[in-house]
Image 1 (cartoon, rainbow, N blue to C red):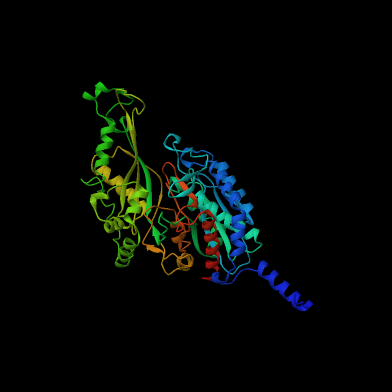
Image 2: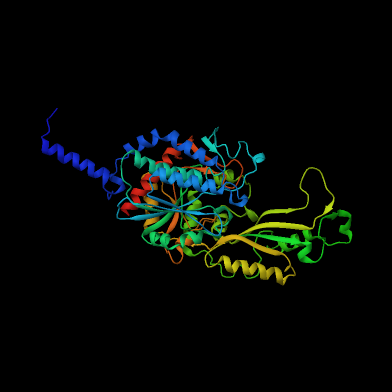
Length: 503
């Protein structure tokens, strides 16, 4: 062994210490990933266990179930992951969370979480929705089944595991973090603007280069999509009742009276039928889509490319469908997905729905709807159009109760947030598919709109499916080498932070 002189030894030791303690300014391509890979693997069981514990604590805003406990659990996890300051933010509904982590870095990035999940009927699941069981699924791999597994606790747990990997390797984060979360995303984020628009939160977000939400973006065949925006949404209830209509019964009657008494249920059904065209699909609400911006040439070009890169068979298999509406082809189905406003019935309930029959004339009927909005449409205008449409057609007595909603979002492809995503995917051997906008919705409008005006989007490797549905899952160990396992998803979050620092 060649002896080192004392001066050279001290120089090398100080250089190593500086690398561990100073903010990273190095390009992601120069990072030694082996320590991260070892640490992520060492902490695998811990990270998966953290996700299982999180899923076992339901936080369902629609049922007001476990919300305080869910919020407190998230705050504890943030502190454990290294956040300097973590605060609960009161709102007109369930609380939000605001946290910061100062790594002394030149750049700051915003991160959005939701801690609430959708409802779940255990009778529809092959594995109890709040037990977070690990199950082997042929052709997919080892998966974790549970409500929130993919939307959004699974990818959020990957992101937290990435922060623990930094702690375990004794490396500072390459960016500072501003964290905001809500507990009402699954009911349309009615109060999230109250979190973001607080003085201290706005001041912190104004230091950010962008805001992103962790999400496993791979399909079953391993392809990845980068969304350049998202549709907006209006969530609402339509309620038909004998009391408001002044026709029909004020309480349930024997069904024989249908011969001489109006039915609030049929009244609601007739109103619903006016909201779409004769095809049962095309929106027909007066004025609803008149401001909707059609797909432009650039967006159509992105969709044409996506149609050649993505598999129609995989999409149908993953969704469990055999035909697209009107039997359109693959390309047109994608254009509809990105560019069409929608009027969807989520649920329709009235009268007796238990075993056997119960011969009644119900006094009340409720339909739960969501409307998806494209650019140039707003939640406020859409709600007004619906109310005016119903009143014009003699259905002004039907209650219209908006429960949540927000406007569409758009983020430039040229933004550093999006370019950093593409760089990470390409480093992992994946050429991403750029997509005009997510057909679903998230409250990114609070970031892309006034007064924040930041690019916003989603990022992550890995795969999951079944959001809002039975047997929602996240892949833990992938059977397909093109699809990243849980640990690969964690590493992608580490890589993204470095790429954002360098972009």
